[in-house]
Length: 168
Image (cartoon, rainbow, N blue to C red; front, side, top):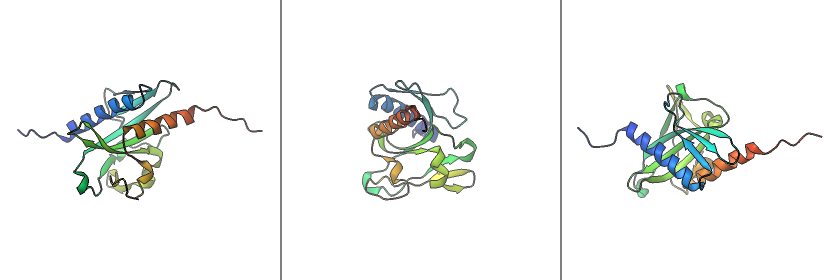
């Protein structure tokens, strides 16, 4: 029997690390919850304690390679679980299992995923470069750490919470 982590185990490790680091990076403002079943492509439900709003995240994790060998990384979202709804996000993360953390992340609103991904059979594929100096179609979504992810999520919550200005 192999002692290497399975892809399912890597996925659960990634979801757990993401949830814990979102709480830490937001000083407790963001409260992530794991659904009992994730068959709808929802890995985390994130509740914002300030606005009282929630959003859903599909987490895709890959194990990071050494910094000097970084080229691009592939993440796939099954079309069966893909929904272009506001308040749904893909969070693709490169896991640093040695440090128990996230090396790099991409936070993409599901409403924008189809436009920046490639359709392959039954999945949508993104291939971002983890190199912080790279300039690819995923650069606007690249987060250098989980503090950046937390800030972007909080900005999303705050923008959605602003009262509508009446038209005069």
